[in-house]
Image 1 (spheres, one colour):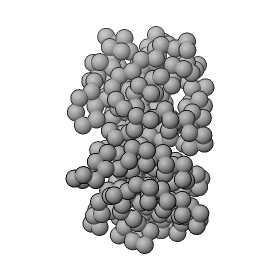
Image 2 (cartoon, one colour; image 1 turned 180 degrees about the vertical axis):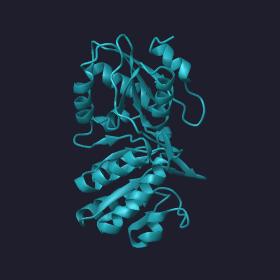
Image 3 (cartoon, helix red, strand yellow; image 1 turned 90 degrees about the vertical axis):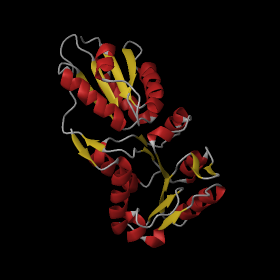
Image 4 (tube, helix red, strand yellow; image 1 turned 90 degrees about the horizontal axis):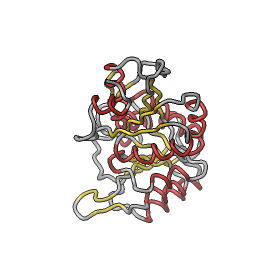
Length: 270
């Protein structure tokens, strides 16, 4: 496990680099402007927009940019931004439907997770670590299609392992996101016999494809993810793996959450 840039910082860095090669890439944020903090603004000031009072104007901008051939990436923070300024809770959906790739943090992920996951043709990615985040950003730009990216602000965790099947009679961990992957790796270090699968894309199409691979295992599967992601992912897997025993363990995001012992208990290791 290698600690790297946070997902948000890796996103900013990679989008800035990609924009240097592709003049169609535009970055819009609902956060207050901070020129010293954003590499995209420093490198491409004519394609960076800070809109802390965002609302329908942002959606209109996204629509116009798309019509003009640009590829807008919108960083949305639901709820209050500063003082009385608040971002409409539906802004993420409006921007996706207008053709933008939307970025938001896991701790602010909207209650409409199932709605995002079910939006036709929109990939929903929760990458872990700098390498995965950069790869997802490049893929979003290459595809020319709107994506929804859930990126954390804490230290990233790059994975230097291959997915593994559990030993006989052991359970399998399924990690999602930064916090979930860190906890799953710690649990597997304590119990090497556990299998480990890692999910990056959670939209219907890609989740169904992943389940086709996961379906060969008929034992217990333990999903480890941030609380906002855990319930929906567990439900989605249970819908697709009716014969499996799918359990969930919440991973800490900024305090709280389960520890290794709780993961091992859910996997019946002890």
